[in-house]
Length: 193
Image (cartoon, rainbow, N blue to C red; front, side):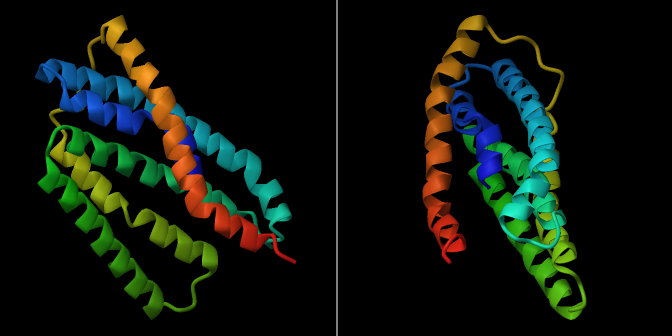
């Protein structure tokens, strides 16, 4: 979760705000296209981070395998894109669709958990992989609901990009701080003797 917030760059909250105020469908499409390019760059950074820090972090945390760390970070890409689609739906005031996305993800996770319980011989990495991929169903639903919005984007005016990034620098700090406060206790407990 922390890595997905770091590589989000605060874009989701800024995008939600600017979509809700977009004066035209063209502006909405251009904002989504511009943000999707940022998300693609963030996905590349997320995957590179997973490759680079999995082994050292597994040694630091005294884990037998780096695979669980790699999966934990790289599967964050699913949540990274799921959040992006959910924020778009909310910014477009499509709250019923945003709720359907969340319900689809939750039902998928319950189904995966039941399958994992039935197949109790899975390794931790395999279980995490199955659970981490469960939100893909909600993600596909979101992309399907927004298919008309994912078109090759035109250009945004420089003033809109500047305003977007002015807000994003604050939303980035806010989203990272929120995640850190949620997980700080876990980090402290993990490092107790």
